[in-house]
Amino acid sequence: MSEYQQFLAERDQIDFLIQKGFQISQVKEHLDGATVEFVHPKENITETLLIGNANARKYFSSLLIKQKQRRNG
Amino acid sequence: MADLRINLAGIKSPNPFWLASAPPTNSGYQVQRAFEAGWGGAVWKTLGDPILNVTSRFAAIHFNGRRVAGFNNIELITDRPLDVNLKEIYETKKKFPNHAVIASLMVEPKQEKWHEIVKRVEDVGVDGLELNFGCPHGMAERGMGSASGQVPALVEKQTYWVKEVAKTPVIVKLTPNITDITATAEAAANGGADAISMINTINSLMGVDLDTWNTIPHVAGKGAHGGYCGPAVKPIALNMVAECARHPNINVPISGIGGISNWQDAVEFMLMGATGVQVCTAAMHHGFRIVEDMIEGLDHYLDSKGIAAVSDIIGKSVPKYSDWGDLDLNYNIVARINTEVCINCNKCHIACEDTSHQCIERLTDGSGKSYLKVREEDCVGCNLCSIVCPVEGAIDMIEVPRELAPMTWNERQAALNAAVECQADVTK
Image (cartoon, each protein chain N blue to C red):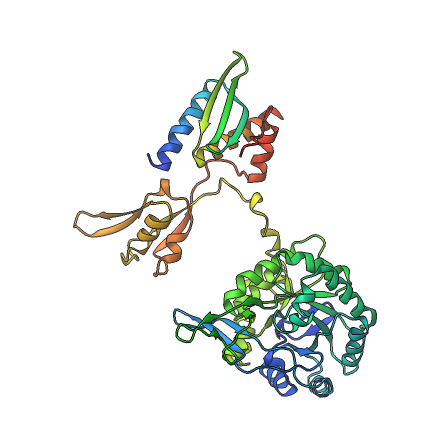
């Protein structure tokens, strides 16, 4: 799979959870990339994604900043 | 015509082009000829206890047809008695009262030695002093030059000693043979320096002769490291100037030195914070008259930009120079090959396929003609293809429309740290 295909696949996974109302609650960075934990604020469900692709890691980081900005009003 | 005059810490000159302290400024004859050619100032070849030189002093790197891409020397400071130099400085200043004559000085790190030479040199009417804490060879083995210049405390102390007696502005010339030049620049400022200049030459060994196994150059079969300069060192020098220019604790003017060969180089150094520039290798390569092109080119450049005075460009690019952590991770460029211009040499394809991100494809059109195309979604915008491309305009690096808001590494890490219960992985 090309880097770009991997990015699309990981971005889709992230978008899927975000569209269902999940929010990023925790990020743990490690040698294999980043483990991103998502929490659904209403249903109290947690989902975890392993994000390895560099552009996908930029992507969830940008979403996290946006999420923080929204929270701060 | 734009106003090309500069004022570096009180030292005025008709233009920003000075000859650096080196063989071109060894004598009054040379400096006067340089001023006649148009140089705005000259830093006299370093004065001190007259030394003894060896023969076979210079060497150069010629790269791909370009002569003197890099230059190396093992020549020391002046070998002429101080009184001879002072007489010629006096005569030169008398003939050229509006040009800047700066005396480069180097003595042992002793207070009385500095006091003595400063007083004697200022008596003949120099416009300023430049303390040579940079020369990397020969003199350094005797505790002077870069041996002093690599120790911030020694830089500060000796600058202070000079300032105790100096009546003219004091420039401290710094060595690049140090991990962080801002440490010695700050020390010079703390010692009272009115300005700093950089860079002196870089420790170097030019080569080894494959037949004789002698060093290049060699002196009767033996070699010693020299000082490297010329166009090859310009990026190193430019970075050091910029790092000092943007440092909050270094608030003295900068005289830029290092591989400056034309007016464009001079503009770059001034945009990055230099008040003026010093030139050596280019003058040694092409003669004093290269300054004519420098003056003319600078003047035209300023006129074309509608800039009235060269001093208006000093430091204008400094705010654009930052740390890696402040760069936008979401800014994207990609390569685009202009097939009308491309000569199908395949260099970009090989470079990308072998050493970058494998995103340039060799395709065949309907008529069986091959062409190169970038798979833009996989291109990381590294620039390598455009760097190796031998044809101007065949590859453009194009900005990709932004999909995500700007985000720096520092902003990203702050957001991650602020994320709820973000935990650091101690194993990474």
